Length: 103
Ligand SMILES: [Zn+2]
Ligand SMILES: [Zn+2]
Image 1: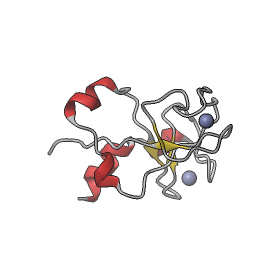
Image 2 (image 1 turned 90 degrees about the vertical axis):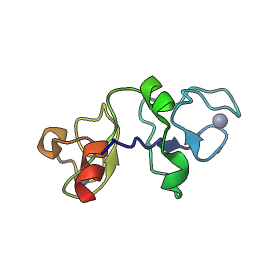
Image 3 (image 1 turned 135 degrees about the vertical axis):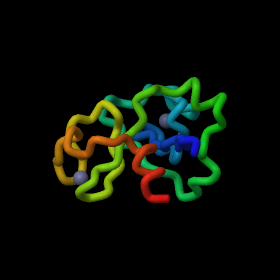
Image 4 (image 1 turned 90 degrees about the horizontal axis):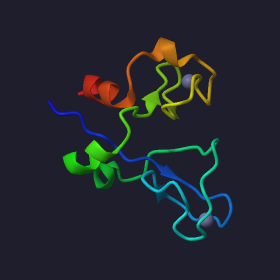
């Protein structure tokens, strides 16, 4: 079973653009960089955001992770869950691995 990698989305706090794809480090609309505390979230239509292998190869090898306590989606570099504060270490698996477990 191949891992699927989902592309997260973020909202620009400067111009209000919504659902900007995670591959963009800057807002395509106003050109401002996303801040370090940008919150990523899953798009409504996940099927639309599964990356091709080619795209996935270009993404970071630190996929976002899912908190096992509250099911929140957290950035790869977040050490603690943004929602409940649980340590990432306790969650162990990254988001893609957890998705496969659910199948
Ligand atoms: Zn913007
Ligand atoms: Zn949590």
